[in-house]
Image 1: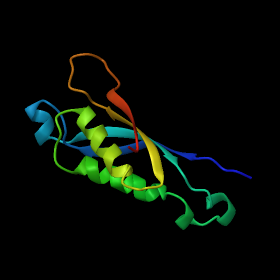
Image 2 (image 1 turned 90 degrees about the vertical axis):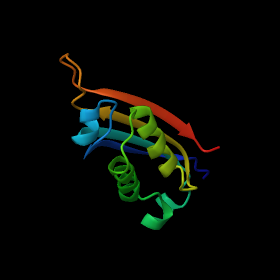
Image 3 (image 1 turned 180 degrees about the horizontal axis):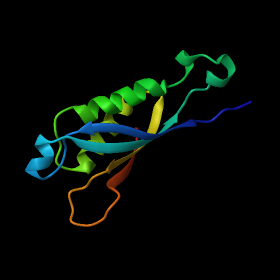
Length: 123
């Protein structure tokens, strides 16, 4: 049997960090939510049932949370790129989708969230 890539889906990672264009956003942390999609090549994982044969999603979440806790970025696009770059460092990850939502965007409207979604592929 031939196996193709697998997609690991991670939904609703909540982190509190300081990112944004406004000075207030850089000094006061706010909630963000991330969704991650990793297209991975792990041909032995289903057969061996061993964590070492797949991409550990706990490690992927930790990497994304570390980027979010890192230096402040002005734009959600910059944050998403940094998360994608970090996840693509694993050679088994072929493609990554990153969605970042700011859950309390500083706008004078009743808005549930403001976000960005990117997809990046290994060069």
